[in-house]
Length: 602
Image 1 (spheres, rainbow, N blue to C red):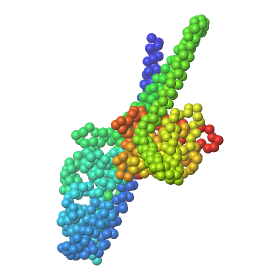
Image 2: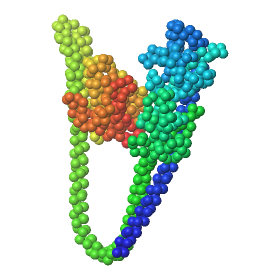
Image 3: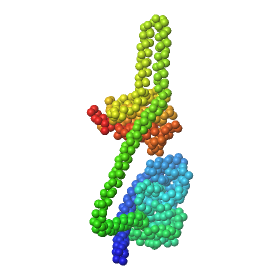
Image 4: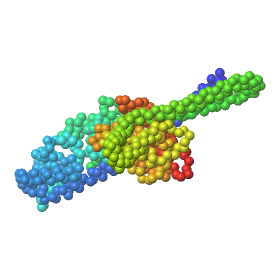
C-alpha cells in the first residue's frame, strides 16, 4: 500500500513538472516566433519600399523627353507613333519594368512599350484610373490594381507631360509586383500586403488573394468592384474583426476564409510607405507544438531516468547487503568455473590461430587475384605485342634473305651492314619481350615499397604505345620533376596506371580526336597522378559504384579491374578517386606518399 502511494506521488509530481515545462517552452517559442516575424516583416518592408522608390521618379524624368510632346501634338503621325513605341520599348527593357505607355488628356493610350504584343495597351482608355486623374491634375500618380487588359497585378507610377505651361498627356510606368518574390527569396513565414481598406492584393497564399482582412460593408465592396481594381473578387473576410485598426493591434488572431476552419497564427505588421499599404506576417502557432512536444518528451525522459537512477540506488543499497553474504559462496564457485575458463581460453587460442591462417590465405588470394588481373591485361594487349614484335621480325627476315644473296655475290661489306641491322632488330625484340616479362612477374612481397614514378609511367606508356598508335590516340604526358620517388611497388604501380590507360583507350573509341593524358602534380608530402581522357565521361550513379567488386559497364568485363587498382593503391596508404575532367571525359587521380632520399615508406 505504501509502495503504491509513493509511486502515485512521484508520478503526479512528474506530470506537474512536465506541464510546467511545456507551458514555459510554448511561451519561449511564441516569443521567439514573434521576434522573428517582426524582424522579417521589417526586412520585407525595407526591401519593397526601396524597390518601389527606385521606380517612383522615373516617369518624372522620362516625361520631359521632347519626343513624347511631339506625338501628343500630332497623335495621328504614323512615323512618330512607331518612333515613340520603339522608344518606350527600349526604356522598358532597360528599366526591367512591366509596361510604359503614353496617354493623351482624355486617357486614351497613344503609344506603349507593348504596342506589338497581343495584349497591347494602345487604343485603351484609362481615364477612370486614379493614377491618370492624379497626373492630369499636375501631381505624381500612384496606384495598385489588376490590369484591365493584361489581368496582371501591378503598381502604376504616372506623371503629367508638360508642353510649356499646359498638360498635354500622361506618362505611366507599370511595375509587375512579382518583384516581391525576387526580393524575398528566403521567407520564413506567410505574409500578405493589404491596401488601406484591408483588401489583400499580394500574398504567399493564393487563397488569401483579393480577400479582405476585416469585414467590409456592402457599400465598400460595391465601390471596390466599380473601380475594377481587383476584378470580380468575392472580397470574403479572413477574420471576424469589423475594423482594420483592431487587427493591427493584435499579436495573435484566427485567420481563414469563412468556409474553412480558421487557423490560429501569431501576427506582426508594419506600414509600407505613403500609399497606405500594410505588410502582415504570420506564423501558425501549431509550428510551436513540435518544439513543445520535443521539450516535454526530453524532460519526461530525463525525469523517468532520474526516478530510475534513484530507484536503482536504493536497490543497490539493499543488494550490497546480500552481496556480502553471497561473497563466500562465489569464492567457492570461482574454483569450479576456472577449469571452464581455461577450456574456453584454449578454444579461443585455436580460433585466433584459424583467423591468422585465414587472413594469410586471404592475402595470398589477393596477390593471386592481382597477378591474374595483370595477366588478363597482358592478354588484352596481346594484339599489340604481336604487332610490335612482328615488325622487327619481318625486317630481320628481309635482311637475312638479302644477306644470303649478297654473300653469293661476295659483297661482304653490305652483308656486314645487314648483320649490324639484324643485331639492332634483335636487341629491339629482346627489349620488347623484357618489358612484358618484367610487367608479368609476380610482386616481390619482401621488396621495399619504393618506386620511381618516371620509370612506372614510361613503362606503362611503352606497353600501351602500339595499341594507342593503332587506334590513333594522342598522348599528352606532363611530369614537372625528374627522379620522383613514391611509396609504391613499381610493378603494381605500372599495373594500376596501365589499367587506367586501357580503360581510357576504350572510353575514347567513339571520339573524333581521341586523346589521353597523364599529368603529375607534386606537393611537399605527396604526389598526385591524373589519368584523363576526352571520352563521353561517367555519370554520377556510375561514379558511386565504379569501384565496387563485380560492377562493370563492359559487356565482357568482370568488374574487378578498378577494385583491384584501388586495393593496390590503398595498400600503400594512398587513394584512388574519380572526377570529371574540366574539358570533358573522366579523370582518375592516384595520390601517393612522396619519398625523398633517405626516407622510409610508411
